[in-house]
Image (cartoon, rainbow, N blue to C red; front, side, top):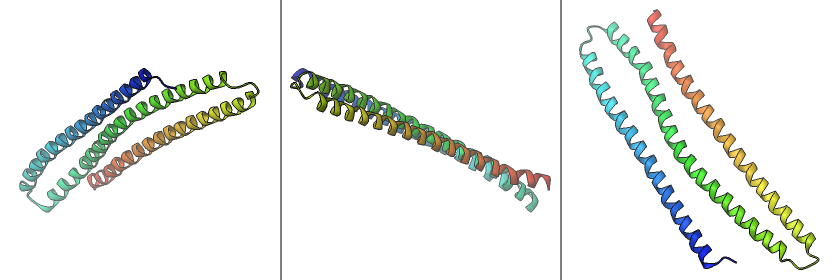
Amino acid sequence: MLTAEQMLAAQKANVETLFGLTTRAFEGVEKLVELNVTASKAALVEAAETTQNMLSVKDAQELLALQASLFQPLAEKTAAYSRHLYDIASGTTAEFGKQFEGQVADAQKKFLAVVDNAAKNAPAGSETAVAVFKSAVAAGNNALESVQKAVKQAADVAEANFNAVANTAVNASKAPAKSKRAA
């Protein structure tokens, strides 16, 4: 049985966790807004420069060369923006994951303490039932750890795939630019 002090301490810890996660979420939103403002400013400056360059074009050949020169940097900037966006999202998600794992670990410890206490106070002759229950709890904990490891591995694979796709897109944009220069 939990005492009033233990319940109050648990409630206080939950409120602190909630406020901590809320702060992390707002930090993620701030980073996202900052990224978008920076990208928007850069896009406006580049649009102005591109417009000036387009107005100074003298023939169709020069226009085609200008268009080709714009494609590769655009792909690279898009990939860089996507990477920043992914970093912000994964960083914020990681904070939530750490908090969740900490809460789960704490809950597991408390539950195991209750199980141990119950086992110590179990009536004589119930040792087999207590052992089976402890074994089931241990199996449940192992299953939870396996799921957490699988989720972590899936996240790592997703990140690697994201980076590979971004790099492929940038490299693909370089190929037409090189072939146009060779021609």
